[in-house]
Length: 251
Image (cartoon, rainbow, N blue to C red):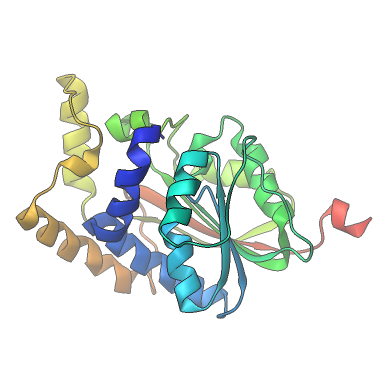
């Protein structure tokens, strides 16, 4: 992600319709698989907004990011337990984590298989990982450029990467942001065809009326995702469980 974008991103995570609904979806899965007080780690936490929200809810939450500027900004906003790393690796702590979040992070990693294995290694047996990634390479747009993505995924391509971690079992997989898929896809395609530039991110396509409308439409998914999985969407969400001790933990 462009360094100048982090401060705006911290505000967006708090106020933008997309992040407000995504937080509802994430909190449903977090609460389902991790009790309050659980040790939660946000891998690629940016400025740590979500870490701060989890701390307020009673989780033992921490996070790391490759951007020192982002971490310092988050700390200045009162978020605790944030740290910056330079190599993109998760540093497992004694006892491991109950839950690891990798939210729109894996696509930033040149070696995504290595990232999945690192997440697996930092979890305790029975621990849960929640991973989200952007969907469909043909939907590549300015958002991918500003965030320095290497790729977008289909469900099958993400599952193939996950198979590289021997101790992960997929317990839930779904696309999401499905109800807004068509208009978002149209904007991406037209922008690509016409080579439209000049905006910092897709989040600039917004106003008060659109925000209320998009929030209402996207928010419809929060209840449905409790019962069904969507076959397509702008993003992908998978929930993984670490099923047994890794080789390193057995030694």
